Length: 90
Image 1: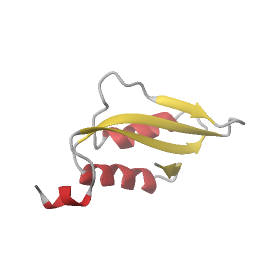
Image 2: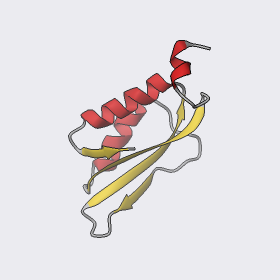
Image 3: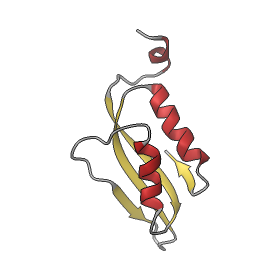
Image 4: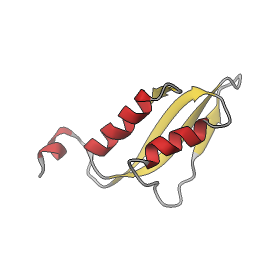
């Protein structure tokens, strides 16, 4: 077992949902996709899901990825956190 694998409960590779929330705009979904796809491939046959808030001011984007390592997940979340358009990443 690699040292990096000892710090996680996940067994890699695995199916992993990534969710990002931000202000509703025409390009927010693509921004989130660009960040995620820079680090991981999407899980086969899983659609990108978009859900607006009740008043339509915010949107959450959920993508299912094929996670390969904890380091990969950390890179995705760092990229999302560094983006000023992303208000929250789960």
